[in-house]
Length: 297
Image 1 (cartoon, rainbow, N blue to C red):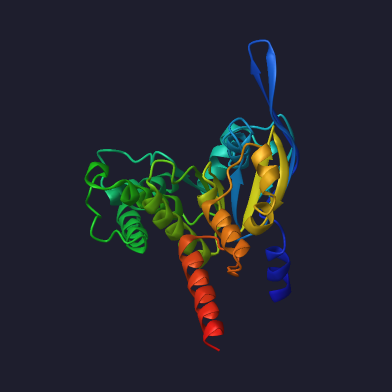
Image 2: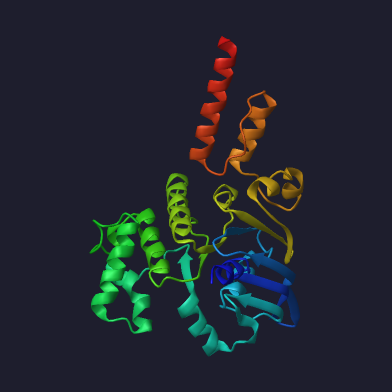
């Protein structure tokens, strides 16, 4: 039995083969995706990055079953999405997928509990059970004191936490996030991304996120770099952002932490690669203490 579980865990939860997507605009065909091959393992967090028009949002949409591909294969949680009709895709999304949106997409006249409980109504979950699950999910997000608050009574960061709770309340296999920090300031963005990562890792959930912000992309385990409809690189943040000149040529910004780390290393301060500000601060403190101790010897 254990061998069967290990074999299942070794299989990608998301796999695409030669995926293409073409849009017809008037008499012109626009190729948004040009043969994308991608493999994501269960529990991985992946950021899709790329300049405007690179195909990153289209890739997210076809992976989430929001759009059909023109050709190619998409296998999600063992299911062939490219073979499904619209009704089958709706059922698939309800069973397997959670969504986090840039604009939160909360219903303005619903309380936090009612917003989070809403997707459970499509599964036929009894009202009291829906409310109990929603309350539990909100408490995990640190919103135990905001259960009865409506969106207008909450900050942007709090609203996005409600959105995260809503995405997770159905216990999906995969969560797709479209610019989840796009409407937040930098401090709140870091706070929300830490929350997303902590919850995803604690539940061993797979996250696929589109972001224009390289600093937020750094939180992921892997980065998928899109350019002109093609997946041009796939690897860890450290691997991807080591090619700074190539990224600039593709119209991508280099994360602040990556630039700071290289500047410090150029001055002889050995700071390892960091994915987020807290990790960077810990690495920098350790490096400076090491230099001081070495100087005292």
